[in-house]
Every structure is written in structure tokens, then in C-alpha cells.
Length: 210
Image (cartoon, rainbow, N blue to C red):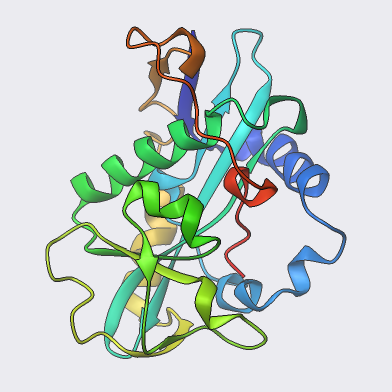
């Protein structure tokens, strides 16, 4: 069985090594990192997937952001180890993390990626929502976790700087429960329904959110 758990400080080195392996050098210079720098992650939604041997095979992170007066979840980076890309592990993390986000009460999710792939999770192109340049507007995608959550939400995506929200996220990140809410999952190829994972371009296994 594979295991999905919230990322803990002990996982930091392995997760960063995975991102370095999957993304080109200079990833931290991308536009999305300007939205994340100095902002606490949404710790309960930053997940790692380990194989039966305990190796980190995939990871996903979320940050808070804003579009105008509205709070949004910024999804990314998500990455799958090159030896396991195309096996559906990224899909496992996407579905698990979005289920957790809905349970936590988040209404809307934003990412930058390829719509043909992410549409299978419910994402669609957002009109009127602008990521910092130089982001291709066709790759700015959104998902409603609550019906109507993206209706009339337009404007530039900016950093979350509300003191109360930042303080709450920082407190959650240091809470002792982080890392304990784990889920065991089967590899997609071993799932009872026999469904095969979807395949596509390299972007279907990773999104830097930029």
C-alpha cells in the first residue's frame, strides 16, 4: 500500500529534492514564487505520497492567495518522481488534497497548468483572473469547491497578507497533529475497478503553479 500524509518538517529535504529533480533550475524565480515567498503554506493540504518502501514518490503543496477581496487556494508545485510518472500517482494526490480542502471549507482553487489534463479534476480556464507576468493566461485555471465560488471573482492574483490569516496558518503549521492524518491507498494499477491512469504530457504529473 502507498501512504498519503501531510508534509512535516522532517519531509522538507526529500520534498525539495523531488522538486529539484522534476523542475528546471531557477524554478524559484517563477512568478508564482513571488506569491509564496514569506507566506505560510496551508500545512494540512501539503501532502507527500510514499511507496511501500517509504520513498517519497510524489508531493503537492498549497498556499493562500487573493484575487481582489477573495481568498483562494494556490495549488502547486505538484510533482511525481520521474520513475513513476504516468502511473496516476499525481491524480491520487490531486483528489485526496482537494477532498481535504473541501472538508476544510475552502471555496475555490487556482493553478497554472494545462487545461486538457487538469479538466479531468474539474478545473477550467478562468477569464478575468490574472497571474503575475509572464504567465500565459490560457493556463490560469480554477476549480469551485463550493458552487458559484468563482462567479464574479476577477482581478490580479496577489499575496495573502491578511495578518489574522497568516497567523492562523503559521499556528496550524506548527501544530502537533500535522503528519498524523494519513491515508493508505492502492497504486492506481492495483485499484479494484482496474482503471488505468490517464496519460498525457509531462505537465500531467507536475505543476509549478507559475
